[in-house]
Length: 195
Ligand code: SF4
Image (cartoon, rainbow, N blue to C red):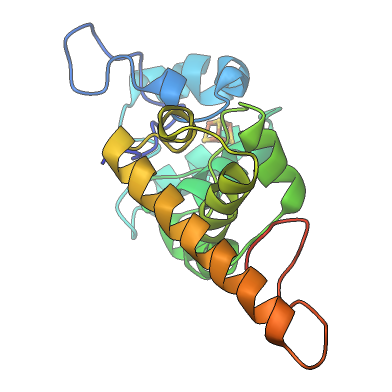
């Protein structure tokens, strides 16, 4: 499985040959990072630990948050940290401890628009539920395993297994729908999977 650990905006570009070099393109829409205040602010470039303070380092936490407060991409930064489950460092003006509860809420997000955008090829960090929905949409749209592997950033054999399972569930659901006495399908047609 592909490493999906997020790359914080406040890290300098990775040198060629390093483990994280070339990863950013695959990890979501990162154009916003060009505008990150922590990339260029002298305070951040002078002190590389500024955005990775110890929990009790109030001075660094306050200094980092002050930079976030005037950052034009603060919301996107926070959203990325939540979507990717980043537990390290300051993101979007929040410490890891402050994000803990928000992480839990984000894990259960399921937004149809985001799933469809990902299906269309947009590079989005999907939640676990959204990834499942994408698999079922891919099965409905008869996408090949190679395309699904690209969209989910997984191996092709794994994508093939996911598609097979989705097809199996669709067949089962059709069967259940025909035989149900209520006549109401127990699934969400727009996403094609059981809610
Ligand atoms: S919100 Fe803070 S951590 Fe995020 S990009 Fe801006 S300055 Fe950097």
